[in-house]
Length: 380
Image (cartoon, rainbow, N blue to C red; front, side, top):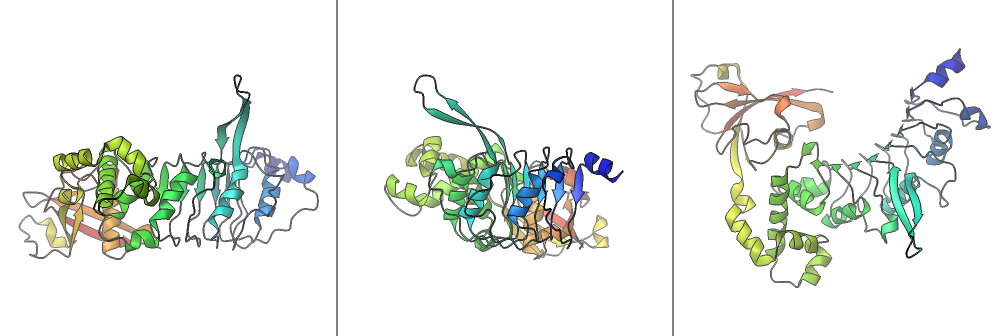
């Protein structure tokens, strides 16, 4: 009966301080988990090599969790010859990984390519088909991301990456990140010194401009308008550094040449900025007040001084607005729910429900000087 249960198992959780003994004969595992899709090996103290040996016997496996295992290194100096080739998602949350190049070399095993011979030149062509697409490296010890030495080192299959709560503090690491993952679509980056220390609300547009492939950042969709605004803002900050040859600019700002090709030369960019206004001039002041029961009365008189005033882009999504409020009020956004109301012209409060989180705030009627009421709900 137990054998039947294992064969039918699709999700397996052996996390939380279970100390597993590696089998002496892996042949016994070959037929044990033919349908398993996900395995959780968090806090088991298994090594990367152990995980590869176990999961190589799971022909339909798609997701592996290896968090809280005190991993500092993954693959050995020689890459494993026994590993799973169907893996879609890998979670390495809360380890002590710091060597970026080593991590990417280890993940390279899970990239699948088809090698074709080009008929005219007889040269080899590597075509990416399917591979690991989702990687979670939240709460590790990554400080620096160097550029890959060549294109063969990159991971073109990865589309989702979480780097929240690491120690990344330089913009060069972000430029390098876009080279390691040229097809990256979704990134979470909150909790790194780079974005914590960046003044105002400029970290988001700078991240967007430096990673051209992104469509979602920190849970909020990047609209076409936001991308254009972000790239023009980034170019304007570069031009404020004075007259510098393009060759020099491209060394300090990896995507400078492609951005210039997309948006035109410097005069055209300046002209476009004048017609669209500078990003800083588009920022609107929003006034925030902590919720009180009396605010439900239309006659309630709001204080002259709001508790918080934040400057935001009208193209920002409601979800990002919630994150900005949490940051300004020093709440952990991951453990905080915010209820928001917009004060309308007649004094009534209109609730801004989460179903509108993907909407930009000007679509919701939020404009310069809008009064927004918030209520905080903290949870563990």
